[in-house]
Every structure is written in C-alpha cells, then in structure tokens.
Image 1 (cartoon, rainbow, N blue to C red):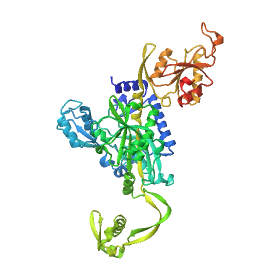
Image 2 (image 1 turned 135 degrees about the vertical axis):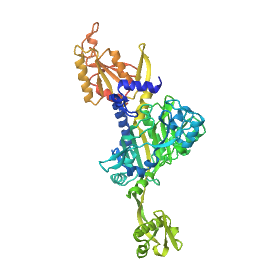
Image 3 (image 1 turned 90 degrees about the horizontal axis):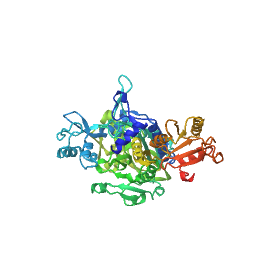
Length: 590
C-alpha cells in the first residue's frame, strides 16, 4: 500500500473524506468531507484568511458559483481552458493524454508540450490504454474544454457556466471593489470558494477532482510605482526549481533567499518573490514538510494566456510532485479584457502630486463631411479617429488617414479630421492596474498536510499510527476521557468537556473501551492533547494511595507526539491548552 492509498484508507475510516454519493455508485471527482475533514478544512481556511487577508489588510468577497457566458468569453476560458484528451478506440475510455505520457515515461511536465508532440511520444513509446491495454499509437490527441455549462433561467434561458476559478468573480466586479478601496492602489481582494472543472480523468482522491475549493488573492498594483515590502521576507530561504534547471535536466534545487532570487533574476517579479516568501513560512505553519517541498517555475509552454511569470508550490507525495498553489503575475490582462467586452471602466484614477502640462493629440471631425460620406457609421468612424489619435499620432502626418471599421479600411482626409496637438493641464491619469495572484487549492493542501503528518511508531511494544498535525490545524484540540464511566468519573469528565467547549476549544468526549484504545483513536485523527479524569481528580484515593499526596481537582494531560503525561490543575486547564495551541508555551514548559 503506497502513501496515497494508506492515507485514503485512513481518511475514510476516521471521517476526513470519502467518495460522494456512494449509495448510488458515486460520481468520480466528487468527495465529501467528513466531520474530521470539514474541521481540518475550516482550520486551514482560517489560517489562510488570517495570513493573506486579515494580517495583510485585504478585502474579502463571496461571488456566485455560476456566471453568465459573457464573463468567460471575456476572460478567455471559452477558447483556451482546455486539457489534452485521448480516447481508446477499443474500450471507449478517455484519458488525459499528458498524464498517460507522464505515467509511462520520465517526462515530468507533458502538459507543456504541443498536442502533436504528445501524440508522437505516445506512438514512439507505444503507450497502451491504462484500462484495456490496447495500443493508443494511432489515436488523435484533441483539446477538451473543462468548463461545466448550464442555463440561467427557464425557457429561452441564457447560457452560463460553473466558474472554473474564483478569480473571475473578483475581476468582473473590479469597478465597484475599487470604489470600496477608495481607488487607492495597491489593494487586494480575496475569496475562498468552490470552483468546478470537468476533469477528463479524476484521480488521486483530492488531488484531481471536479469540484474543489480555492483560496485566491488578487492583489491590484500600480506597475510603475507600487513595490512589495521585500524587506519583511528577504531572508526567507526558498527551494527553487527554475525553468533553466528543468530544461537542463538538473533535478537539483537551488536554496536561495528571496533577496538572492530577485537580485539574480531567477524570480523576475518582485511581487511574486514576495508572496513566495510569505507563503513558504505559512506552509510550514500548517504542517507541510519543508524537506518535501519546492517552488517550480512554469516552462514557456505551460504559461497561462494571462501570465508573464508563474511559479507553483509543489509537495512530494509517493514520489510525485503535486501542485498546491500557483503564483502568477497576470499583468493587466483580465481587467483589460473585461473592459473591452463590457464597455465599462476598469481603470483607477492616479492623482499627480502636482498638475502637469502636456501636449495631447486631439481630433474634432467634421460631421458634416462624415455623415454624408459614411451614413450610419459616421459616429463609429469619429470614435476610431479619436482612438487612433491617442494611439498613433504619426498616422495623421500625411494627407489622408486610415482607420479600421468592422474589418474594413476607411480613409478620411486629414483636413476633415480636425486633428491638432494642444497643450493641456492634467491633474492625473487613468491607469489599468496589474494583478499579482497567489491561488491555493484547499483540497490539495489538506491532502498534503495529512500525508506529511502521517507517522508510525511503537509505544509500549505496540505499533501506533498518528497524525503529527500542528495543534492549530488539528480537527480536535483535546479529547476528554473518564478513566471509567462510574463512581462519578463520567459525570465529572462530561462537565469538564462542556467547560472546555465554552472556553472555545474543540473537544471530543469518549468513554468507550480501554483508555489506551481511546488514546490511539485520538492519535489517529491528530488530536494533540488528551485529558483523563481519574479518582485523583475527585480526591478519592485508590488502593494503596496516601490521601494526603493526592492532587485533587487535577487531571492527566497527555501530549500526542511524545505520549508524555503531566498533572494539570483543572482551574488552569483551558488557559494552558490555549497557550499550547497558540505556541506560547511547549508541553515541557507546563
């Protein structure tokens, strides 16, 4: 049983996650988070919100999961949100073509290759169908759009799509969101929510799914003036796997500080470098093993249509590297596209420190000429002349000027355009912000945290499995047990559990079975501490005990990782647990 299979078995047995709708045969790519998984998911999302929203001073929104077709036409998803698909002619099963190439060869990033090259590799390597073992050598590799289509409204309804990323819900609302930010750059807008992709071949449980949760931040900046606070992370060491190393078949990582990565040009965007530094420490906080972690730069063929540079945070599981976050510098692509398609203003007014005088080309077309000459198109020709004057003033230097109207060239005498260059005083300018985007896959973070936390050891001659989760992320903070459910121990323990819940702790109560088995159950779901109420807690001596040596109103507090135990006063228990979870003290400090 490999690491992933062992983890999935534990996840089902202990209530972290399991296939959805199992009573009806399930549906590939959809998973239900059980009680432990939902709590872990909430804790990771809260930790993300704390670092990337609250402490960073950003806004957070919640946009709809379904949006009209026009949004995705503008964003480019209708035309370019594809994966490579290949279908076996023998059994009819479809596969991700790049995935079967990666599984059958040493090629790591087949997604970056053209379809034709992937097809050639399948033929040269005589790769077989994973389902029926028939040869796929003669099968075509096509593009498959991953978006789920739906209809908005009854009857002659409008087409819509389940969002493939949460980002577009932020971009499309930028005009209003910038008002909330008082049109002051830089500012960030975050969102945690569902996204949907009709994956060709879902696999590896939470790694490749059709419904998943994203935590995304869109940070809007002035590309000419805004700089990140690099000094706050410049000494953070990043394990970098650059594009140059990948293309040179060099699998070794470069351990560089954020400052070194920027100064050497390996990370070309200061903003991306800043977020790599912030995220690296955050990953460690939630329990990702830094010895099984790297930042990998996208190769040219992998870059999304909107990105000038992109790095993935990747974690190693079962010998494979799994993307858990993408860090992209998206430029002004998204806002510019939505402005073009919607006709709305997606700019921010940038106030100058002092007014400036500039020469500004302008036109004042003779409508008395344009009207008879172009009829109903006269207004469009005038608009085109105005745009051309702003974009290319040199075009007006001759006797005639040509503009394009619905794909047709239209010529106008320059003397009829009213072209001139005037001196104007300006107090500022409208700019289209650029966007820096860290995009986190919450399900993949959960999968990675659980895989990296999974530990086996031996206690008192017995094998033990436990999840070495940070206390802050653990689904349950403390398990409360009575030594036995009799002589008032159970009642006392239940009252203690309620008191700890009122103090804000996540508590489970368990009086079933031997105390050792109860410890093991909590170890296996990652509960960092367990409390046992015994006769000493009640001030009742057991056989052979000296009543004067009893520590009444105390309990046994057990630490998960070391299995060490200490007597702790009940009066200070809630506070002690809070300080332990918050990292203010260690168990040895108690």
